[in-house]
Image 1 (cartoon, one colour):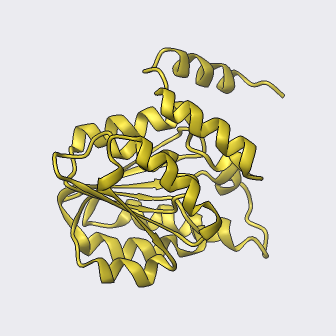
Image 2 (cartoon, one colour):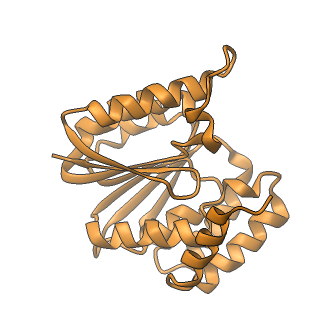
Length: 213
């Protein structure tokens, strides 16, 4: 069913910055080579990620959940000169596709891929971050949050994706729906965390922006 919200979304996309050619190509490859292309950030959200990154102008970005690398490339657009982006995923089958498009971009040498558990990899990086994008397994969102906040530089920004979870956060949570239950708890936890100030944006599947005090 086509809704008025979808019409607003289409209008917003048409009146936002154009999608870069490299990202259009990656979008096509994602639809061709993966079974869940809807996981892609896409044109409109991608331009939002790019804009937020440019406003922060981060020296160090962390992404949890790479998928095919679309969001990473959007975030990289705002990197400060000499800045770095570390992106973590568990799916080694997409590693080469990610690398191909990273290397086609101006930021290939600044982007480092990591395979494995983010909870194991993040402490080993030995870094503090200016911008973090959480877009991985929902059941670990609270664990990622508690690990990341102490690693943020003052004024740093944490972005949490899929926080509306297809509207399930507004419905009665089914007993066996662990992901929705944890996201409901996560949204409350983030909003009430005194270390940050937070706004939840109803963009696509929900994007929370949290600024570290």
